[in-house]
Image 1 (cartoon, rainbow, N blue to C red):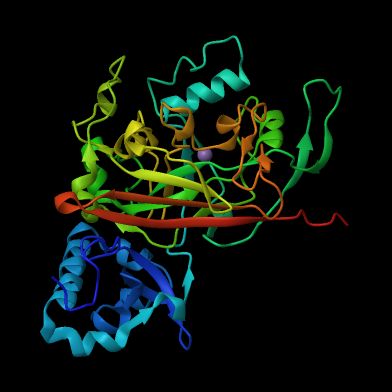
Image 2: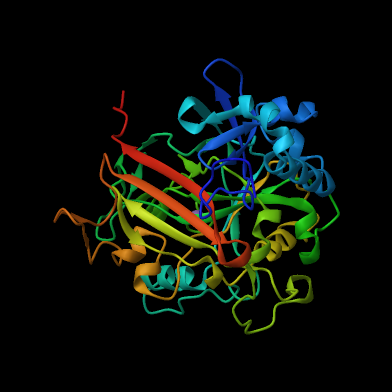
Amino acid sequence: MTWLDLPADDLFGLDNLPYGVFAPAEGRPRVGVRVGSRVLDLAAVLDDPAFAQPTLNAFMAQGREKWSAARARIRELLTDVAHRDTATPHLHHLTDVRLYLPFEVGDYVDFYASEHHATNLGRLFRPGGDPLTPNWKHLPIGYHGRSGTVVLSGTPVVRPHGQRKSPDAAAPDFGPSQRLDIEAEVGFVVGTGSPAGTPVSVAGFRDHVFGICLVNDWSARDIQAWEYVPLGPFLGKSFATSVSPWVVPLEALDAAWTGLPTRDPEPLPYLADTGKEGLDLALSVRLNGQEISTPPFASMYWSGAQMLAHMTVNGASTRTGDLYASGTVSGPAAHEAGSLIELTRAGAEPLTLSDGRTRTFLEDGDEITITGTAPGPSGTRIGLGEVRGRIHPPRPLT
Ligand code: MN
């Protein structure tokens, strides 16, 4: 129960309470928590200077006990009517505030943890061969991305230039990407880091990871296909990676944990799962407002805990603000794929949109919106917000 006027089925009720960074019309960016269609100014209502910072990092660095205490205090403020008069002046309508990138991104890693996505792409990129590489079921494959180009939802995505080489051409040419794609993903945000030489175990996940966000890993498939051998994604993905503005804390996901798909073969002991590390998140991808896919996160082969364990098993340190993304979320069904290259079979089977036009890859002016929900307590749902981006024409070459 809350003294706020909130519908019972609001995706941003008291069981969610995701964190972000906002500024009112007059004022500097500070930390807030979303409730309904409003944001509560935590710098004003909680006695902790970490919330007056323009990123979540100082708060996230405090660790799990402090995260829990802050969440309990926020719930109390929004529940006990005795706090209504003091809290109300610090509740701002989302339409009156500006949102910012919620955390300063440390290192950024992107995984490849969906068996369906990896299989689909393997068939397209390596026809005739085994769709999964020999290592795929033994370790969560990933690459280190470019944290400096992680941007807030809503930031325009300018079509990148690069080298492209079609299979029948003798040499590459240079120009705007003609196969600009999306990847619907879930991002894990590290709260408390880990020192060099100290791997984080699968069970240590909840002490280190603060929460999750939605990610769109924009991908220029033509640039990617030419450059990725043998060292992996580079300029085909580093021009922009969009994240949602609200980081949903793990504590809000208690009802979302589920088992992972069957392991075959069993992974090495450091990757053994503890039974309930999958997350039953439902994603939706819209192109210019029309839903084109509904990727189910519960189908992911590797969990966020396994990804963190693998990422640190060599002794690599982690830091507050590190972001690691799941890789494209694709379910077993055709309409559950999280990228256009899968949905259109590399452009061979265009999507027909409701206005009668067709799409293979993204055109200038197209807008992609990825949303998500998770199970909440007692059959309710909580919202993961949205990550949105519109394609802008390529910059003129000078
Ligand atoms: Mn990706």
